[in-house]
Amino acid sequence: MGQMFMACAYDIENKICCVIDVDKFHANCYSYSGAVSSIHYLLRQAPYRVMWIGEYVRMENSEKFYKNISDFEKEEYLLGFSTIYNQEHFDFDEQDESYNQKVSFITQNNKLWNRISVWDISEEYFDWKNTQSVKYEGYLINHSKKLAVDLAEYYQKSKSYSKNIGTYAVDLIPPLTETGGGIDILFFDGLSTKTTENIATTWCGDLLQIVDELPEDYKIIDCCFIECKSRSIYCYFNYGINSECFIKDGNDLFSAVTLSIKSRKRISPRNIKAIEGDGYIDFTPILVP
Image (cartoon, rainbow, N blue to C red; front, top):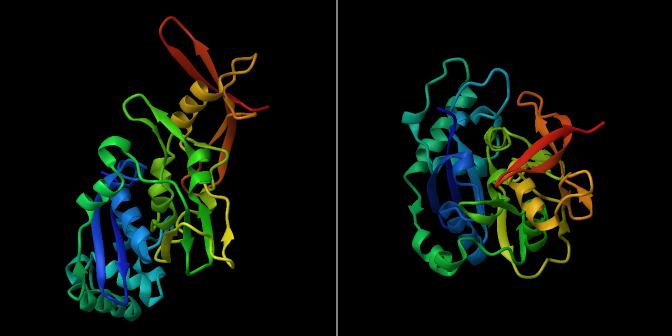
């Protein structure tokens, strides 16, 4: 069936949280997704900690492809889990007292949250019926790490295209704040070589906010998460092809790779050739020499 995810934004001091069932990671991680709209809205109002929590955090993981509860030590992360989970979601472990203490802490805090929903107000705020997207203006800042992403730059680099949706992007917040395993499915069919998959999960549970002006001592980082197929279609229609029919990405050729699920290492960089037929276009990946 695959790993299911819940998105949560939570304010530790005021015990306010917003929790949204987002199904599988690749179902609701886009600029047009209602869950993304809710989280963006909240972050434009005030700082919140954010986690895109996959259910595998509750499971034993001997091969360490993803994190589970035992890997999270800081109280602010456990409080994030407490917005969703309680005792009934975990098994007692006779061999691991630290694990049991974490489960107890999560259970104790589960009932203390004031739970809110901003789904409707966020759609109105972003004029979703007309825009079908959140705003990519200002900066997503990480107060915990004093880092920032220029949202306009992110969107420009990450734009993709689908016939059913139009122009959109994988939003940056779900990959940055997921607990693990989500991007492996998101990028199952490949990703642009410009993708910064190495920073996925590294903002999980951090205190985030969206602001108009960049704070003086915050560093802007390179950030983009780009699926191969949808970006190649976008580039084809916006940048065209070269004399050998390879799709361009701005002044460069569009290039993509696949990821090893176990090692997260990149495999087989390829350019994409677009062959136009009678009423169709055949996109063919060609191994880069």
